[in-house]
Length: 415
Image (cartoon, rainbow, N blue to C red; front, side, top):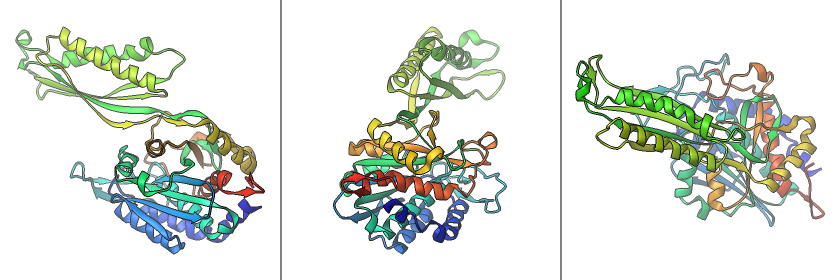
């Protein structure tokens, strides 16, 4: 039972791994500023005896375990934290941790309120287990510690820094995310769309400034913006088929400085989500069409300006790879292997496997004993139960990778 051998050290390493997780939890760092996090990851990998450890960019880290002929499996763990204060009840909470955000130049609280500290610890644990028991598998395992998932910049940066040329091409790319929507210790998979395609859009509307008592002499961008906000509400309800899922949110509307001044511009910030590229494209076309026509109707002196940012691709699990992962999960985890509902949040996970041109599979990891009372990701209270979450995170990565790497008489094993 070679898989059992690979995972045989979990009891022995549990105490150390829990302390390591607490270290990452208490030392969160912002996107593309994960310098100490990357340094500690490298130190851990070297302590495991991993010989091939590479930097990709300033804060990306990759570890390669070459173990003879066989498949190549890559697995990703994201490593960045969020600009927010933690409000959990944990005695190891990152209370009072701050960092200067390089994008804004301002000091901000920082917390691992999305669970990336679990992802770091789980992937390190999987590397340690696989490197300690090379007699039980064959092939190559690649651990990708990716920065800046929260800003959709990390995977793109690693591709731009040449990750495709620096690593062997994987046969499959694996990833997981701890969630509050699954029972603690459960692993959830699905074929097809898992996480939504997303984009934020900043729209600048141009008016003509005037005294508030003489609106006829100006073009009011606030009235224009209000008309646009109202009209945009019809896109999902009247242009998207009922069988599809789409979200269009106007999250910010800024204009003006004083009650009796009609300003000369207004800025709207929008966010879109969709589970297909076609729906996402329709949303963006509809937004630009409505905005342009409303500006024309309002006599706007200049056309509107559109700036797209924080763009996330669709995470869409490949059929055969996910079926292989699910079969391995079912055999190893039994009833704790379950279906995963579509997650409306978004990820940059797929950018690296798409750059390699290889299939990928991404699953959810239950992080709380009571999902009904669990805080959502990005909540200031989001701090998963340490166990069984950490053990299960390692097991899930090793079990999934073993569906390719562990063989018995020419056939894949899952136990």
